[in-house]
Length: 98
Image (cartoon, rainbow, N blue to C red; front, side):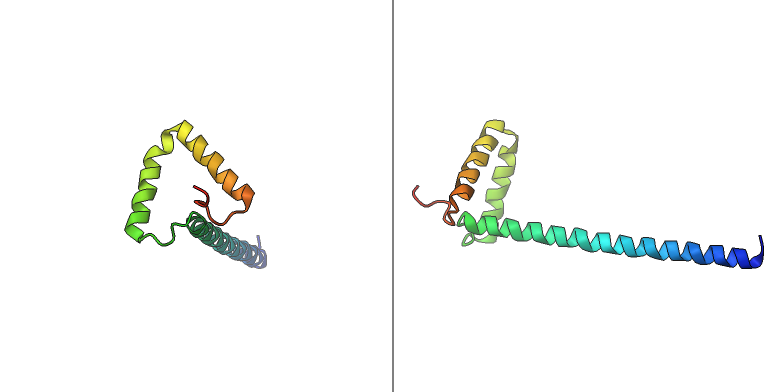
């Protein structure tokens, strides 16, 4: 190969490398946006369940309790059903009428 061909080949490789860096950066940004959206959704669920007035320690303790119950399929099914009912009602007050 001539020196000119090697230079052109190197230039193309650099362009590919830069394109991969751009794609990686775009993927990182998208992942961060998705994570942010999920965190906002979780905050909305806390508010919908009217737990946004709980202090942080109590809320985390309650969530850890739920995590312990995660393996109980029957309990998870009940929670899934109850959550679906609240969402279908469009009710912003999860505990209303209880």
